[in-house]
Structure formats: structure tokens, C-alpha cells
Amino acid sequence: MHLMKLSIILFILFFLVILPAHALAQMPSLAMTVSPSPGPSPTPVSVNYTLPYPGILADNPLYPLKTLRDNIIGWLISNPLKKAKFDLLQSDKRLQIGVYLIQKDKTETSLAASTISKGENYLTEAVNKAKQAKKQGEVTNDLFNTLHTAILKHEEVLKMLKDEVAASQKDSFTRMYTSELELDKQLPHAK
Image 1 (cartoon, rainbow, N blue to C red):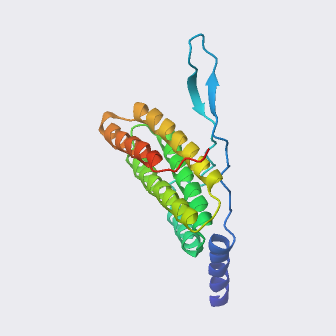
Image 2: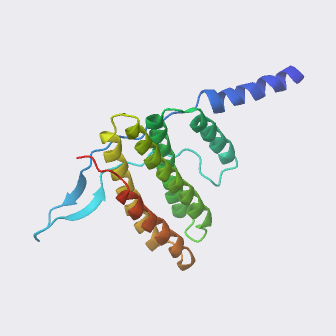
């Protein structure tokens, strides 16, 4: 019986740590989707950047195991370029989790705001790791372009969510939106 429990625990650890489902963030172009308008300047409709499917949501009892797995994987990545890409993916997933949570229940948005806020910390770390990779001589132009596009998408989503949440949560979404604007200014935009 003891051997059976040990086997189950090892299987679960193997599943959570060694065989994580790695989905890589898309490397979108910097282009924004625009709609034709009769006026002199086009109106931006949506940033051409797809947020990944996040898997289980933060309200799921297994979510702490997922975050533990992600923390272990992140801790094991030593290359700053790979770490920046991983952090960007984590940020994108947490933003998408927040969107799903708000769609699920617009009255209970504190968990969504907290999850998105943690994701924005990952995005800040991705920018810092990308800068570190650039200092080490890595080719980072595509990564900086991707980060710029991701930040634009995050701004777009945060602005949309700010309009959907209760008045008590609007300030936290406004702060996150403002920090995105500041983060974008820190990028050495590659052309």
C-alpha cells in the first residue's frame, strides 16, 4: 500500500514538474489591425497579438500546484533571453486568466485583479531579462518588438476590463494600465 502511494506521488510530481505543457508565446509582428476610415488617420481596432490559453484558472483548487510548477521551471531557466520569453508567457497567461475570471463573474473581480497584477510583475521581469540579454550580446530585436506588441495588447485589455469592472476595482485596473505605459517607455524599441 505504501509503495502504491509513493508511486502515485511520483507520477504526479513527474506530471507537474518534468513534463509541463510548454506553450510558447507567439512572436507576432508589430503591426496593429486597423479598420479603414474615411478620415485622414486610421483608427486602431485591436493589437495583432494572441494571448495564450491559460489552462486552469486561479479559482481552481489545483492552481497553486500550477504556480508551483511554473515557479520551479522559471527558477531553472538561467539564460536571460529564454527567461524573458518564459516570463512573457506567464504574464500573458495571467492576463488571460483575469479576463476569463471577469467574464465568469463581473461582481467578484478582486481575484482577477490580483492575478493580472502578478502577471504584470512577470512582464516587468521579462523586460528586465531582455535588457540583460542585450547587455550580454544576445540578439534581442525580435524579443523587444514582441514585448512592445505584448505591452500594447495588455494596455488594450486592461482598458477594456477597466470599463467592465465594478467602480471599486477601476482604480487598480487604471494603475496597472498606467504602469504598462511606463513599462513600454523603458523598451529600446527595435525597428
